[in-house]
Image (cartoon, rainbow, N blue to C red; front, side):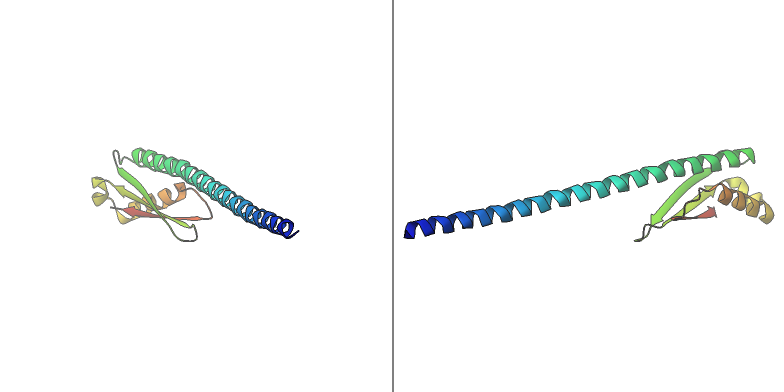
Length: 129
């Protein structure tokens, strides 16, 4: 009889250990799944902004070419803060800017800002070098 109680105790011990291992395994699988979904969301968001950025740079180059500032250097940089807010800076360079009037430079800046994509999580600044 004593041995029967010991067998039952061992069975419950094994069942308890197995239960704990199954719960830990489920937790690990769940964590990996959530992290994978977050990464996919982040990748999709980056792809979304990449398309907008490319369109903005192309539009800016086309506008500058139309205005006679052919072969302008156009570069778009961004920083992302801890809240996910993106701050873009469009840097434009052309040696002919040295000879442009202040009114013309303001007009160029205003037009380049109007070409910028509108997203509530973004701000855009223009820097003419």
